[in-house]
Length: 257
Image 1 (cartoon, one colour):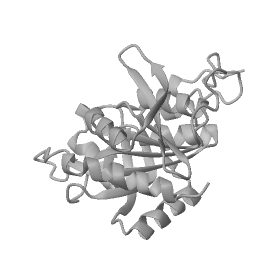
Image 2 (cartoon, helix red, strand yellow):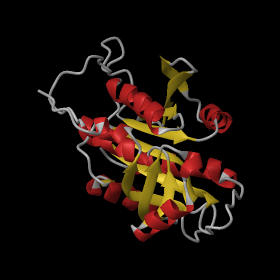
Image 3 (cartoon, one colour):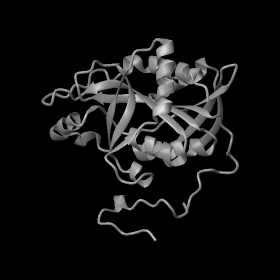
């Protein structure tokens, strides 16, 4: 029997049955194992899909919009692509549905804020994420950090190096509250080793561990919180959106299951 805790978010249930099943029978196995999960402009993603002659496969209806998963045929395999919604709860729901459709290897890509003096449009392969969002606590017991799969990250690194792409490795601070990234919290997160901030990574890492699928996240720096007195929106990483998709697609093609 689940024990009541003072803080409800700490009541992790690892044993009783889930009431809603994501593995819908009519959709199970309809997507390939590899999937790109893109936190990018829908217009840019649509341009990428058109360029790659992508085919729509399955749609997930939500109250606000419909998310469609596509497949791109590389000639030797098919790779799924899906637009990812902002924020851990929404992104986690779509990721669950992708897994229910047969996806087992996911590479997410999106922007992040710099907590240090990092130039805009720099790529960061996430090693671990600080859990200051709510979603991850429904998938893993409480802890301060959730780590990436080292073996899978090694595969991603190998592919990045083979392709000659520049990147750094680092820790991200995942938060639910974009407008509550305060000066003191930014300073504290930097002292803990976080170099960037995002809104989904910790949750997606936790879901991947719970569902036993492979997951990695490649972030690119957008705005900057490095100067505690002056927030710098910069160009919000827009100059690298197309490049980010191309890199992730190349990396996913290069990885063997």
